[in-house]
Amino acid sequence: MFFHIVLERNMQLHPRYFGRNLRDNLVSKLMKDVEGTCSGRHGFVVAVTGIENIGKGLIRDGTGFVTFPVKYQCVVFRPFKGEILEAVVTMVNKMGFFAEAGPVQIFVSNHLIPDDMEFQSGDMPNYTTSDGSVKIQKDSEVRLKIIGTRVDATEIFCIGTIKDDFLGVINDPATA
Amino acid sequence: MSGEEEENAAELKIGEEFLKAKCLMNCEVSLILEHKYEQLQQTSDDPMNQVSQVFEKSLQYVKRFSRYKNPDAVRQVREILARYQLAEFELCVLGNLCPETVEEAIAMVPSIKTRGRAQDDEAIEKMLNDLSLIKKFE
Image (cartoon, one colour):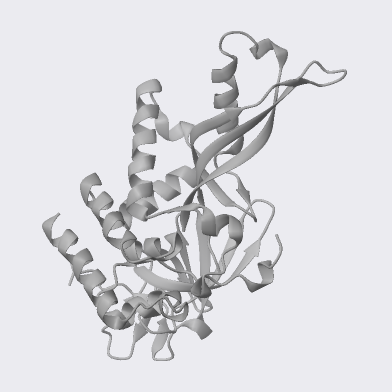
């Protein structure tokens, strides 16, 4: 799920950036520093949308760098266990398939794919029901439930399932 | 964060911080990110080079999965769902997935039933109807 939250960060700025553009410099450095990062607690920082407050700068002993506490609003993407969301299939193999929901990768093991779907190899590997009516392959859109998350220093990785009611390939009315 | 072990969105256990935070539906994120991308386009020749991979992937994702395209419809969806005493998180899951039946809605957001908030099937049905009307008239 995407959230709009307020985060705080201590920004260190080199004295050469001081002057009337200090604020602009600080904001552009903040965007460079935080956009695209990921933490286990807040998830992926997608975009900084505004600055709430920039506190008083504090000169660091010995270096001349100044630290500013900056409060900023940003859009983050944070997956939760138990959350149901839609994702795009990126890779299919006999172990299961990988899907992407925005910045996050989700793996669905073949144990968590309904039993009536069989793996078919070939140049477009896929999972298909015995009657061929439902097919999961690269670029399919699926609705899945996140059942586990693993947090790295720079990435969040999820395990999902489509073995439940109302999960699986999305019946897109446009293509039906 | 304390209680991380028990994190479970189905029971609305997503941590104090996120429970209070403003959730965004995919269509809202799409509006925000596209606006930001347009701003970048004005200031640089090659905006795709300026943005992070996370931004690029998120933008592609929300464009693909936005249920409502025009800003007015997005606002109406939020207004309608806000009448039903939903938590932010529940509101956004419903707005993103647009379930068609009461049963499906409860499967997507089990917490609407378990929290004892007098959400009977009729109320849920009415809510889903209102939502599908917006989609129709968009």
